[in-house]
Image (cartoon, rainbow, N blue to C red; front, side, top):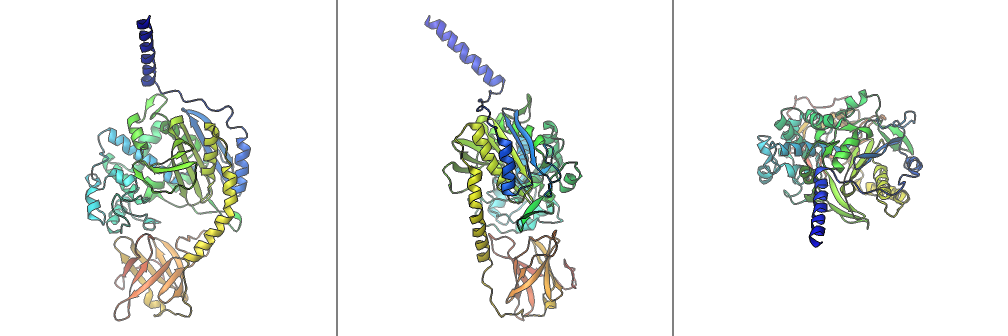
Length: 522
């Protein structure tokens, strides 16, 4: 009898093992009716946070739980958001780049731990130690030693290869592999490595390896393509208590970090693959081992613990990780001018969600994601939305006070040391390129990467950016302080500019007279 029982037990174990290997595990059941009242909740939250619209996709075990648009894709409230409304997904793009890199690693075409110079000959950073050793993992986990240096790529006309070549001149702010410092530029390097390996563009690699196999037929890579679509969201911001349209920010140059446009419907298969086992409808897209490797945290972010429900984690290959109310969570927030988004995975429950909004810098996608997670996991409800709304006005006031402190002390009664004409011309740095100074009536203007900003005299030889006139004007350099430097004879020879707050001011040296500079004299 004991032998018969033992044999029966072994058969059960073998049967369970065959099920585990032969097919994906069945996801745990969800609470009964977890989305009751959800539509009313979202519609009220849109009003509370002054967000025109949001698109939401939620999958569980490969099945669609929610796929819906709420509100409006334009701030005037005339065009409804649908599951096919395209939004820029911003930094959620990073996981697409690492996914392709994971596929290339499976094929033996990419070694995550090999020096990146193997794939981009001549690649260098300012730190020679880092130049010799930096690899693909370092690039995509933000441990290169470089801070953001985002001003370098805003509106640049450089190619990706030219942009990457400029990194050798950029100052690091930390030692190599010691600190987490978020960087879009290192993802451009990773994307360029992909291009070198596959001998085509990063865009074509993502299209062939991800969009095509997953049926993401509406997704694209540029503002130009987005605006050609029949259904796309308009960026917005709040000014003077009202919603206004914003200009689209073209981020194509940093595509591997930021540039994908997608919709809730297209993100369903992406979420299913990521929250599942790397396959879609039985078709293998990436191996389970590679998916697990992509989701494994590699670098501590150093984020402090500020709330009991969330234990900070690290950064995996294109994903932030933490523990949310006892569950491992992978996520990535996203922010591009006029848009905010978040993608969230709870791998243990095979749960994935994407929330896309057309409002600049809003918390709403992340708050809705928390509410959805609580509902779908059967956790005790918490009023995340109401709590953050209660904190909103004090936070705004604190932000205004901080901005006032950042303005710094202004010395009264000083004048420029030179006539305005003596400041004009082009100033150049090998990393950041050319900064142009022109006479603009009775003041100066600064032009960098095609962005022209009026400058008012602040004090001594320091000038400050003024908000450009016009609703669509680019205010990137508003309140931006530059200081002119002189040589021993008193002539203006350089201008120091805080292009990256984490390092010393960049000193742009005057170009020879007669060399054209950006901007024009009036």
